[in-house]
Length: 165
Image (cartoon, rainbow, N blue to C red; front, side, top):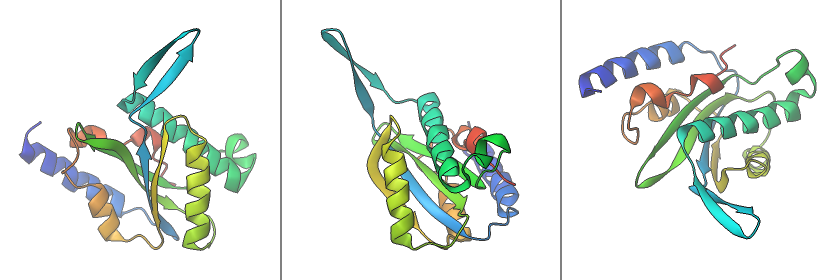
């Protein structure tokens, strides 16, 4: 994809996402394990992370998070925290997600960080590097949607895991 086309897509995505109104925006970065060892019988094999596995892992994390805060309403009635998810990573950096989540209630940064680390650790691909910041602003959205660190900007937005009201 050309740089000019990536810039046009970036501009359109930023314009669209800036229209999302979050009441309590939290910025989260979640890092993936590069691979996992699967033990079967006497031989083990190594499975590497890829975009599909990363997206599925994030979906699992978001399900855990939504069940924690909304209980059975999350599965019965579709209660979800509004979320924007962007996948980043290259051959020289681990795959990681930048998230913007509208947190359902006010909590301290330490409480949220602890909850995120706990639930992320329950996923198969969750690596112990996470970062949480309260009061995310437009600057975080611009950082999430930067061109650097993405092999293909258009496919870096994980629309399957984005829930926008």
